Amino acid sequence: MAANSSSTGSKSSNSAGGKQSGPSAEQVVATFQRMRQEQRSMASKAAELEMDINEHSLVIDTLREVDPSRKCFRLVGGVLVERTVKEVLPALETNKEQISKIIESINTQMQTKGRELTEYRERYNIRLVGEGDSEAQGQSAASSRDSEGGGSKSGAGVLVS
Image (cartoon, rainbow, N blue to C red; front, side):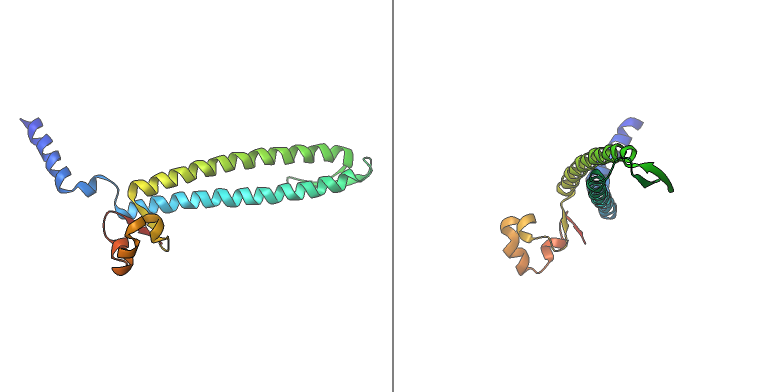
């Protein structure tokens, strides 16, 4: 009998508070913002590594035109070390290749995170402030403009600034 009363109690709580079974609007927004921030940090890291590749390319091109026995200086772990061009050039080329692989990996992760964000937005009907009514609401854009924001704040959707 106790099992029956607990199962009916859970059914009544689900039907009465169906919105409480999922995360609250604040939790949805916080998770969405965190996911967006993760994607932004990946993009900034990729941009930073792209600049490193450009610097490596510039140095490699410069060193190719120099005598291989000429001495050059390289910063390794915060320490400036003296080497020859023939020692430094292969290391720079290897570093450049490794950075390129890392960028490819980050880009793949960004695409995955973008798909996760899109799925999350669709699951919780998240719309961004200023995002076109034409994208989110399609044909109901004219009616939402007439109601002046009533459609963006009501319903099960979440509005994110």
